[in-house]
Image 1: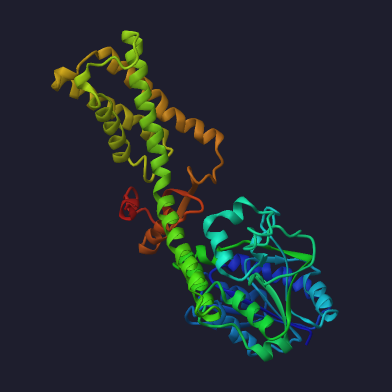
Image 2 (image 1 turned 120 degrees about the vertical axis):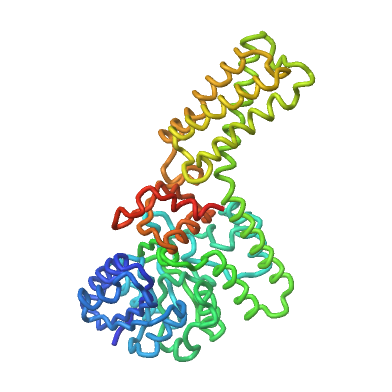
Length: 457
């Protein structure tokens, strides 16, 4: 047997189908076997494999025991000279397996190899070649220096971005989304460490390969496409938490006694969690800052139009002449859901602004000492009714739908607790927002319900 290909699947049926189709073509003329280990998917993945790929050896688990454990299940039965671990959300080229096997045949000192991995847009997926966590590598990653100075050998060790992606390189580690190892290596060092639920097991395996005397190489003679993170998106797994947990496990396992490394990893966890929290609330905060700025500017401009002097209000009126109208506008917009589940709704922002203007006008009727000029109130209201919905119109027309500020307009299929949980997870993602515009149900029984309210913070 030339090669055993192992895929661990979790709720990515369509991606798995595409992966198996590409693998089937790539293995033409090669003596091979393909394993799919399914970690309790509920999307029909198992049925699809049985129907469309009857030659695939399917291992259907009743629970999700993690990526490492599932791979080990197949590794115990694999008979190939080479063992290829590949993610289900990938597409391989027709020469991928053949090219890497030929390369390893000619380099007996290399125990494990990975190829070039591309994002769906054709850009390099940086995780396809990495360094092991160390105090310095952890520091450059946590501090952001590795991103600011991607061509520096000193600062860009985390993803080795200073290396030419089209050249062969010996590296510390390659990505677990595609890695090929010799059977001899597996028999000597064993399978993946099941302490790692997901993430980190590839780093650990590469480390153990090198400890056993073999080299690890990045081999860009061929490439694959990886739709990164699809399984995590379809689960309740906190990918961020699992990633840093994996880094902790790696450091504790291979850098015992390294207080400095542990300190940086722990700092990274705290900082990254803080970034996630800030990002969660930053999108509505940015919109609120825009709206507050428009109200402030409208008040100044309106007072100038009437009095020909900027901000010519009585001394006793400061700062309330600005604070109260701005707070009234922001509270009204919040109450109409503009900062939570309808961030770019032009109609809601218009109605909320009109309501705020009416409240402000009513307040001037009750508090005569602040009724400086009805003309100022009317002018301010008119400007806000123009600009508060207006900047949202401009944003919709000029900003990408995938913008972190605006978010992807998204519909969620389902109305049960799991659907609400999906909503919470989408809103919590720091790397890109989702503007959930509604839920889809198979009946009309819950039509008009504010299910989204159940997921508000």
